[in-house]
Image (cartoon, rainbow, N blue to C red):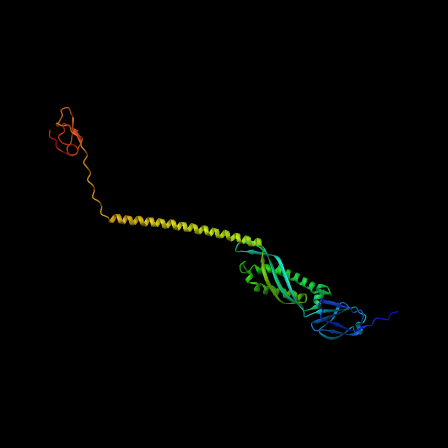
Length: 305
């Protein structure tokens, strides 16, 4: 027969590179065993499902005689380790009031988190063994949820052109919200920053098309105005030219009227009066008058009968 296993009189909690929180086997611990907690660590000593003590770095006594037969758990914690959490979320509603286009945006950020109250982390996550990846995934999920619920109202304060210049202001708003949520689960958020706001290609193309259309309308309007100016200018120039010509014409001497040639009289038959003719021609105005007329009815010349 084998003898009984030797009871452990000493338990140590040292920095663990694999786990954030891990459980120590106390099945063979001696009564009044020594517990040594290294710097950067904490130890949760749980008796009958209740936290008996949270042991900071130093030497402690555990498994006292009164607890010898009670169920016990000891959980080590890397308490000073800071986790850089890279997180992101998408499908955040956003309306570009400049173009009146509705879209969704994505946000990428980074947070620094450490375990502040291990007991709250333990009870919230319900896990005594927790890796860095598991804690990272939990925090990223929680942070994405907070960002999705709060960033829509935050980002809507900024237009498309200025939103990525206001990341610090957005970060401060999210940090306050996230820090409060972290405290509720035993974590401490020391910093948070929004690194980038992503707009999808479909929105960018729609925005480009909108402004291209606007620019074309502006160019067409400018062209119409230029044409109207040209027409007005030509009209004014023609009017000024006409007025100048009229002034010049008024200043020039009027030409003397040219004498009108006397109407050519029909040739008279030689030999003077012919008995068989019943008319004659006025020697002054050329009017045709009766042979017996003494005075020309047109110019008053007296005829010699």
